Length: 406
Image (cartoon, rainbow, N blue to C red; front, top):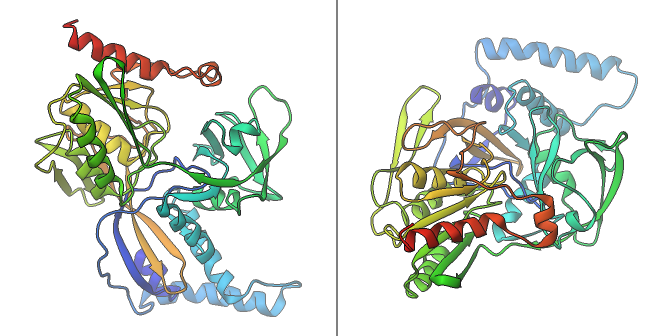
């Protein structure tokens, strides 16, 4: 497939990011995550043999359209983009995607930790519809009345069904102060309706930490970006200096990030064995062992997860669960266990290609299944409105029980 796209369509790769762990739990502000180290790649210079003969039909059809079609045709660039998208659509994989230059720039923007959006976690469901998984308090989506389970049918006049999640979310993005006009389908409501959401600058702190009552430490990670490991370790050292009786590590609503950062952060809690196993399409496995020098490998540990904990979050939570280092409390995780290669093309566009899947150290497949918490605690809409956090409360009770010998 790589030779077909890059050779026959004359698309030249100018850079390669190896092993992209990309979540589909996006902050509709957008949260795309890359991984590992840039490296070289080899691309065929052009079509050869059977590929050239097959693409002769494409050019025959195109020239007929040029000659006979009564109407306007796209320019050569849009024709190329459409051809690439057409091939990708046939793959039936929402994580393999083509981003035009503007869309690719939007995706990369999130790595700064701030972006213009509506403040909602979204996912493309099995029916090819963009579903809101979660909204955040005091953010535009929540203020406009959007709810988990809502389906976004269109943005403005553009229907988004069957788009890649990247394309759909890129439409929702826009400058702070502008309006996203969303057509929403909601269970129990007979007809779709319009919701207008005023976009704003969304800034999510990477790490939050504090001491709770009863000498329990709390640490929340919002994403696995390039600064996450150093910031988490700094906060973790400060918390451990307080000599807490237990630690709550909050990965709720964390959409993922850099794979190498996930390994480094997982190694802060797991001292030996593996953090994950990556399986290539030819069946070969690559093991990612825990790194030495972890800061919190002995302290009693609870990991909070929910339906928007995805990708790198599931890697870390799965490693902790498999190593019996701590328990998971909350809700079933999203179930995003595929790995993408991100290719930057010569015009600034980007091609993301699924090339592997990852498994927990004990070989559990996460893709489309997710992780089951050891203690199931649901967070209801009523809880959110009332400012209650039963998942956090259950984690505190669990750690209290351990300290009291219960």
